[in-house]
Length: 420
Image (cartoon, rainbow, N blue to C red):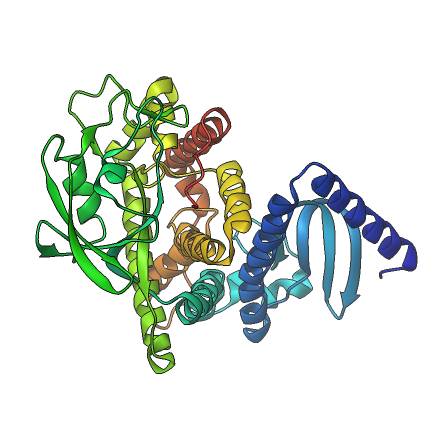
């Protein structure tokens, strides 16, 4: 049971940690960490609620890991906070066939439940992430509108040693919205970037909306190899092909929506982001994706280029990188924070459903396999998961190396601020 001493020590510890973060100028990071912990505990809440509904025994629901700072018992479940705020957990006895469980608790273990209940409980952690992402998308759509295929100029760049960039020469301004390229209405927000990149020395006609009026603006991209903006190269000199730049920071233009359509727009946005995240996840673990990470780890210039171009880089981030981006998003404003949290929740949901132990998807996969192997009228088939270990070991080794590589990159070459 909790006592006043535990609560007092907990409050003092929280106050001390907050003071240290604020004094170090890391208040944005602390706020983002708190948000992540809440998200993780909502993930665990999905397992907790469905396990209780399924009649399973839940013995612990804790924030953090390590030494126990505070706890309270209600019925058969202990709730509390532990010292290391690296997530949280729910303990359901018998989550694998290897776990030793008291004889009297065996009927209420996870492993003794029907397959459909085990699949629901195993999948229930990812479901809250999609719900959170949808709610955040709905808030974003109502507050800031929906993204369009048009491109808004967030700011004009200043190139080192260059009097005027092509954008400045053409008279472009921050806040302008690009609605067409070479007479073609934009149907993809990447079109502007792609056309400019491949049009070095060639005149590009941009349809620019300003103050409700659209006019054509002629601009000639320059080769960005070796050109620096704020000391950062636009493109490395060793690149074989020229890359066009005009000196603008591109952002997605938005359009306001009818509140009656907001739910549908939020659903469409969530579907688009899920598709992008799934593709990114597949690419990250593909031969090409793994090769790209290896190249960045072994080539400092390649790593620096990927970090300096967050809009085009396909480099994933580690927990450290996510924390850095989260602090930047908090500082940049609520719109950027909402966008990042939507991406993070979708990524959490997809990663947790990887069909590998110890991910939730691994437990769901085992339950499905046992359901397939169980013959009608026969006792439940129980898979011997120890036979999976030789097959899982190489995958887990790749995951460990992958994670360590991302941590190294996020420390040595942190991604530059993508929130402008």
